[in-house]
Length: 362
Image 1 (cartoon, helix red, strand yellow):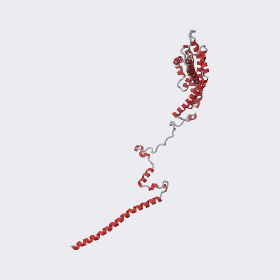
Image 2 (cartoon, one colour; image 1 turned 90 degrees about the horizontal axis):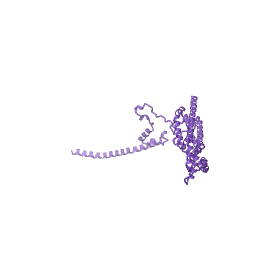
Image 3 (cartoon, rainbow, N blue to C red; image 1 turned 45 degrees about the horizontal axis):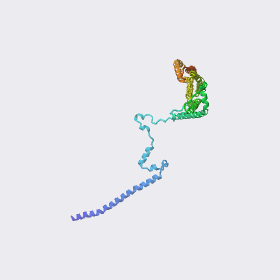
Image 4 (cartoon, rainbow, N blue to C red; image 1 turned 120 degrees about the vertical axis):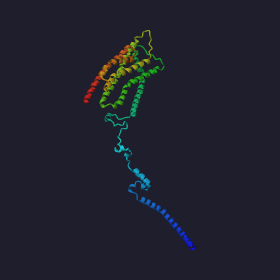
């Protein structure tokens, strides 16, 4: 038994160093395993740097050097996006590509009208129209200031000729304020400037609306504007040379010799200007009816059927515009009734011409 125990102990002693040797060998193997991947990675990186595909030379070959996850992300981003994939199943069978956007005009979204471009009417926004209106208004206002300053230089002569119908009755006008003389001359100058600027005002109105009028209708518009200017000054001349002198003589005839007239020059001047301006506008009645007939708003039959109402309106206007007496009202109402009859004739002539033109076009 003792001999057996000795043998077991000797075996244990002999086997112990062998385990230490085996542990040293496994440690060396692990160290070799750890070193080998680093060298292999270096070799792979060097190989990838040396062999860059022709497609990646533009980017410097950075795409192949990125990790695998980044390469997958870049490949997914390079793929074309299918728009139909986001659509519901019912709409996938329809068009997969979106329609190309139409070329639209920046101003109103429509293509420019060739007829409008031919007559010089270029597309404009509301801001452009307002800017043009402002420019023309400033020109008219500047012309008004210039004409007023020029008329003020001759204001003494202007006031004399305006007061002449009253001075011919051997009477004089009176001024009741210290600044009355200056204000009288200023009003006379401003009123004269307004009367003289009527053609210039109509000219700018024509230039503002001319692009919207066809070339065939421009001759009609020019004749209409010229006729309106002539009729306006005819009304002013009718009031100043006929109606006002007659009214002054008639009114002063009711003043007895035992009375003294103290009529203010300011009131007299206001009456002259207002009366001249209103009658000049009322004398535009034939032109207004002609234009309304041209656009189909009124017809000669309508004017004839409404004549009795028109007569009442004319006499009410005459009573409002003329001085407060029956004779002046009659002198004002009779010409207006004549102008209404002339409007009917012009309306009939315009309608016949319009129908002939329509038949010729057909």
